[in-house]
Image (tube, rainbow, N blue to C red):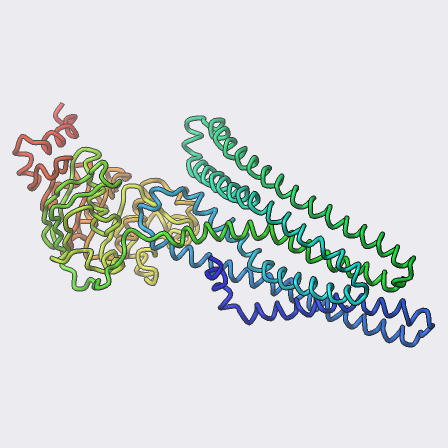
Length: 575
């Protein structure tokens, strides 16, 4: 764990060593000042050497300026080391999250993920900066002050340093409780983030059901749990800090009392006692630093443990070692004895499914809700891994193809459209980020959304709000279809792609989709059976698998499920 943490310093080692050098310089200057003070009180002032006093004053002022510069570098560039490490870790964890399978997101709350990327990494950054620096400065100050104190009076110094084991035992005893409490705080703030993200995303539902009070009550529960965990952590921290403060105050009292006695006995003089008192404060500074560092260590290492926990999650779906790029796609798709369930050994969604879709054909998939139609479509681009069997694309197992290459050749429009926060142009460009403006406009025209876009004050640069909240359902779906036109893939999967459109717009887009589908393998999932009349083949999927297949006319001629579904939708026309 520690080795992995240290590895993040490697790209910034020059800046890190610069920070350590000036931290060392600053600590050394702090140790020099009491020596000058002792010399001035014991020799220069009593002997009336004003010329030396002026020179010493100038030297000390120069040293103060050097310390100021050192302190600035440590405070600014030292913090930047932590910021750079935080940036690298955030990049790593975000990149890793992109590799994880959808099953991870199915089972992990968004708020928990956000907590690890934001809250945890912020505390890791503080540890990355202050940790090495505090330890380094503390040991210099402890070692340097011990040597100098020992030269002033060894008896008082041994008495003083005899309390260090007591402080170490105290720190070790409290450390275990601090680790546990800070870990609980992490979990609780993640729950608060998850509840907050969920409530904000569903605010329109809450308002429509007038459940604002219910949402406040749910949030309050998590908020109270978080505050309780913080209270416990602060209780332990208070015990720790006040205990250390008591020991430090006792050491100050010890120096003043015993040191005063030594002056009375003429074992040391006033200059020595003054310098000794200054050095005791320098001796106590690293103890205070280490006390503060212990809290940073608990925060930072707890956050880093959670960071590593995510980084060590292996994606369920990865490229095989001999995976190939998908080229010259014809589009023949075949399922061979495919079985799938979202939970292992439970709730099988598809069982021993066998079918073949010819290249360049438009195939529609219909059937009752819960039959597995959407799951069927999600298996083709390997969003989930099948339990048994094979899925072949152009007679090659899709597991033998590189995932990125496979998905680049598949265009998917889902019923639940997701648009990114940004402009209309940004969202259409998501289909092909390097496309030209003319290509974006052409895609929008094919999706029958161009006229609407240019009617807006900012046209294609119109901001659509979070998740496209400023657009209607139909408008969002047309933007997603424009995105598909821009991608222009050889295989299309349309999962209720026109479900949110009015009848007039649906007819227009249906013609555009039919134009786009020419020469491509197209899989259409639809509840509106009127939209799939022209499909080359229609398959009826139930829990028992494919129970019927044929074109629209042939299926209507049979007394089967398709005919019953069709008649139930168009019964009003015959009434």
